[in-house]
Amino acid sequence: MTRHFLTGAELTAMELDALLERAMELKAAPRSSHALAGRSVALIFQKPSTRTRLSFEVGIHELGGHPVVLRAEELQLSRGEALRDTALVLSRHVAAVGVRTGPHETLEELSQHSSIPVINMLTALHHPCQALADLLTLREAYGSLEGVRVAYVGDGNNVARSLAVLGTLAGMDVAVASPPGYALEEDLALGAGASGTLTLHTDPREAVAGASAVYTDVWVSMGDETTAAERRSALAPYKLDDALLDAAAPGAFAMHDLPAHPGEEISAEVLYGSRQRIWDQAENRRHAQKALLELLVAPA
Ligand code: CP
Image 1 (spheres, protein in one colour):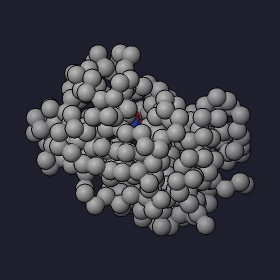
Image 2: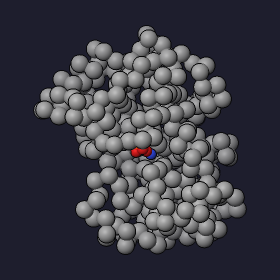
Image 3: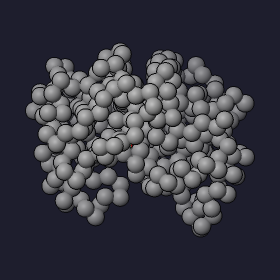
Image 4: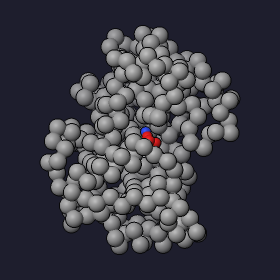
């Protein structure tokens, strides 16, 4: 049975734990696995990317495979070819496909017609590969994730949603603080084996109280440009700076999935200072995704 990775809820808690453990092994020995030797993986980008493209392309190469990067305008999809037909052709050539697109439904439709794993490289709703790297970063810092509290402050977007889905699956207590109109949905579907908690707040200081890490993301994501001014105004009280970190648990560090806008959602002092693990997060994308590819791609 083909396994896809669309939201992260496809994993069991045990699989997630093993994946993070494997990612740590691969980080320690980046060229130790040849799981994709002789195989190719397609990477379809319908939106810009720096970290996702770099980490997948280099990671597939390190696993002995060949990444095939396809930009949207190069595909017949852009001229109206059906997602179904694209999926059927991809399935005849490559071992897996990663997709970065806007509508989550596009990813779901592609997966319904794919006999190879489909991996979500970001949709408007979910960014589960980012969450894997986030959990790897937290695990490096704290070991077991059971009962560790992480606070996310700002826009309740795809990054926050995936942190909630995969963080609770890892047993974490995820606290999300957002202004009215920007909150995550209260009935967000968590993974079947989720043992952690998700709490929604409006007060950022309430969310960060007792948190071992404080996470933020841009206030104007791809596709939100027309509402930029009102977003900046509503989200201004949620800026991640030293004062907010001081309100978290002693030793708490800052997280950000990047790209960042220093001076806006995060202060430059925090982004480039000693109280963050943001650049580790960016590196951990590669190690976590390599472990994911090992899990999803069946041996040849
Ligand atoms: N965090 C992240 O997905 O970065 P890119 O948009 O650069 O891929």
